[in-house]
Image 1 (tube, one colour):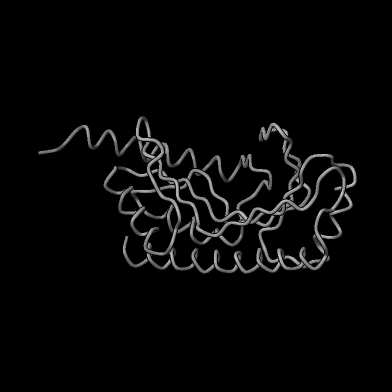
Image 2: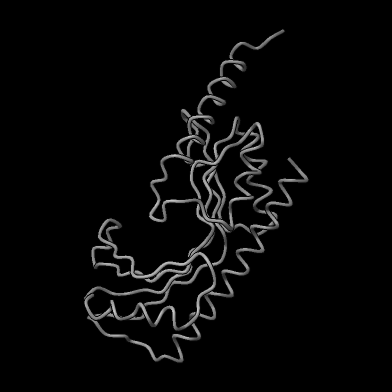
Length: 204
């Protein structure tokens, strides 16, 4: 017996998937304005699966940001961002901007984050379990009303205040140490992306 509700739900999912992927190719609203090269193979693999599609993503990044006391996101000033390993000179070159910033400035590493739509709760849980098996810190269903959306977040993070009131508050040696740590976390994050790719390829 044909389940009409199941057919209708699949048609709606496929239509939403087509529209979302089209918008991602033509209208990218992220700060970067394009998909991160490192994560592109993973996104393409997920989007090739009939039960999933990605709605937003970041491969992981090293950033320097000025965060106001009210910590409102729209007031955050981005001073530097890289989705690849960075050299100390790259950061130091951008620290000149600190002289005009009174807010607290942080050097951060933010891990991979993925938002993925799934056809069912069962499929969403399957994906979450795969992500957990390769070390994702957090994975869960964040929406289950009109769409079932999974959020997956990597484990590696770094968040260090380095400047305030227009002054660098740490030594250059310590800055070098933080940057080395950020680069190490970036590489571990890349390894996790590769592992997740292989898991999806072999299990889904």
